Image (cartoon, rainbow, N blue to C red):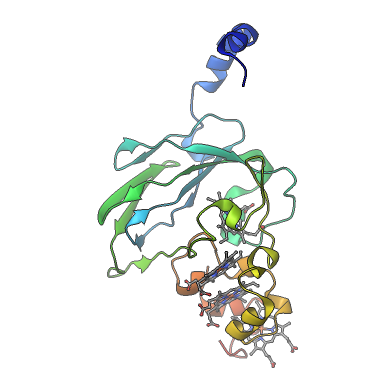
Length: 225
Ligand code: HEC
Ligand code: HEC
Ligand code: HEC
Ligand code: HEC
C-alpha cells in the first residue's frame, strides 16, 4: 500500500485529467448484462448480478429496487485465451480481453424486484416455486458455486478459464458423466456447450432445449432425445 501522501504527490499532476476521463460511467449501450437471466422466478437469497463493461471504465450505473447498487470489479486474466463454449455469454461479451466484469449479489426476499442496468429494467420475481409462465432460474449447487474459483482459475484476483471437463471432473468424474448422459463421453467434454454452470432457466442447468442441444451433432429424429 502506498501512503496517502505519496499518492497525492505522484498523482496531483494527473488528477484533473483522471477526473475528466473517469467521471462519467460507461454509456448503457456499452454495458452488457450477463446475469441474472430475464423473465425468471428465483428462490429467495442472493441474486448474482454480473455485468461487463469496457475495460478500465469506471463503475457502470446499476440499481436494485431503485437504490444504487455497488458493484465490484473483476478483470479477466489475459492468460485466458481459449474460446468459451458458453455461447450466450461469448455472444454478449464479444472480445473478452476488452472487457471488465462488475459483480454484486443483492439478497432478495420473496416478492417483486427490479434491476436496472445496461439501459434495461429487469423484473424479477422471487418466490419459493415457479410462477405461471415464468421459469424457475437455478444455480449450480454450493460449494462449487460459492466463489468463482469453484470452477475458474483465479490468479491475483483475475478471472481465468474454467476449462471443461477439468473444472468439473473433481466432482463429476468420467464414470458419473457416462452414467448421467448414457452417451459416449468424448463428444460431451465441453460441458458448457449444454450447461450454463452460472445460472439457467431450465432443469439440469441446460442452456437450451434438448432438441437444440442434440441437433448440433445429430439429425433431429435420430437421437434418443
Ligand atoms: C460451477 C462452475 C462455475 C462457477 C462457480 C463459475 N463459473 Fe464462470 N464459467 C464456467 C464455465 C464452465 C465457463 C465456460 C468455460 C470456459 O470458457 O472456460 C465459464 C465462463 C464464464 C464467463 C464467460 C467468458 C466468455 O468469454 O464468454 C464469464 C464472464 C464467467 N464465467 C464469469 C464467472 C464469474 C464472475 C464467476 C464467479 C462469480 C463464475 N464465472 C463462476 C463455470 C463456472
Ligand atoms: C466442488 C464440486 C463440484 C464441482 C467443481 C462442479 N460440480 Fe456440478 N454439482 C456438484 C454437486 C454436489 C451437485 C448436486 C448433485 C448432483 O446433481 O450431482 C452438482 C450438480 C450439477 C448439475 C445438476 C444441477 C441441477 O440443476 O440438477 C450440473 C448440470 C452440474 N453440476 C454441472 C457441472 C459442471 C458443468 C461443472 C464444471 C464446469 C461442475 N458441475 C462443477 C458438485 C460440483
Ligand atoms: C450434449 C449436451 C450435454 C453436454 C455436452 C453435457 N451434458 Fe450434462 N446433461 C445434459 C442433459 C440433456 C442432462 C439431463 C439428463 C438427461 O436428460 O440426459 C444433463 C444432466 C447433467 C447433470 C445432472 C445429473 C443429475 O441427474 O443430477 C450433471 C451433473 C451433468 N449433466 C454434468 C455434465 C458435465 C460435468 C459435463 C461435461 C463433462 C456435461 N454434463 C456435458 C446434456 C449435456
Ligand atoms: C458434440 C457432438 C454431440 C452432441 C452435442 C451430442 N452427441 Fe450424441 N453422439 C455424438 C457422437 C460422436 C456419437 C458416437 C457416434 C457413433 O459412434 O456413431 C454419439 C452417439 C449418440 C448415440 C448413440 C448413437 C448410435 O447411433 O448408437 C445417441 C443415442 C446419442 N448420441 C444421443 C444424443 C443426445 C440425446 C444428445 C443431446 C442430449 C446428443 N447425443 C448430443 C456426438 C454428439
